[in-house]
Amino acid sequence: MFGEGNQTYQKVVELAEAWRPAKDYGHESKFQNDLSDFLDEQLNEQNTGGMDGIMGGRDGGYVVSRERGNSRGDVVIDDVVGIEMKRHFDNGKKKKLRGQLEDYADNYPYVIALTCGIDDMDGWRELENKFSGGRGMGMDQTEFTFIVKKRENFGDPHDFGSGSGMGDLLGF
Image (cartoon, rainbow, N blue to C red):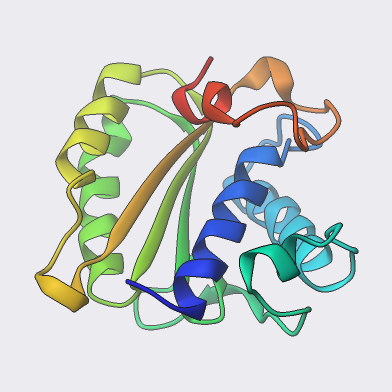
């Protein structure tokens, strides 16, 4: 996957890694609203400090939607990036998430699985390993990224530029 869609995906991954939920909400939809508002603001209203120019991206105009598309992605950017969110991922949610990610692969070229809190890291890693090679063939292959938001970081300031973001990506 090349071009503007890939640039959008890379930018959304970076922002999703930087995002910190305002608090430990009682419902998944509150996390979705928090992330959606953050992405919309960062992609469309904030000066990204020249990142658009460096990455060859565009300046705003991103459509950030909730519950959009055939697979009703939790958060969708430009009908290109689908984000499936889970609250406190545990073993009971693994099978459902696997099916949702397979459905997303049929509808979006780029998919982010993001959990706000995690109770089953083994199950999460199983899914990450299963989808890490992508889905589909050739140019129709879907790219996946898995991101864990640790509960102890909820309410902290967003984490812009404090390194590669790999710690949060890997759940550290």
